[in-house]
Length: 269
Image (cartoon, rainbow, N blue to C red):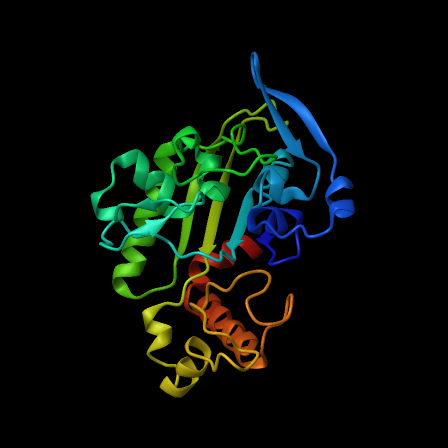
């Protein structure tokens, strides 16, 4: 199941761009109990308000092979990085290399994916997984956190070798989750993270990369951190991408599928 780059209520809310009060009023909310005596409010928008990977729906159906394409607008944060980052609350965070285990777990991949493994949200202090009101990831755990650490280690190894960030977790125990109607069983869980591998970048003409990364600010192609484009307003139009941006993304993903076919083939068998 792929995480589509779509025009969602989640994107509008996180970016603070619900510009029409009437549209805002049409988005109802529901109150529900996440734990005994603990209530939360969820916006009744699309699935991104609860599970932006669609994993829980597939696990509820007990799919044996689950493939998730995280078309994320943010990079994977390597624990070897010495670069400071901002969390969702726009607060400066230390480089991953200086983080505690819990801080790195929250920072590495973000709540959409990490919440499935029970990574602590620690949202009260404005942590990495800070969520806007109306969103809920607190009831999403279906995997053991040890498998999350395995996933991150696979990404770290791939990053170091210049390979695509594709990780296949086999024989993953799915834990019961009564909130989402998930019952225990075992699956294989494969994740593709939106990342431009060094092995692929070395094959791209430098002029092409220059045009995509440092586009003329007066043109429709605004400068951006390829391939982590924003879902909306990356360029001057609401959801407008240039042919060069689109074709380069398509070429990269085709190359990744070909390069990692041994890991991906079982998902289509």
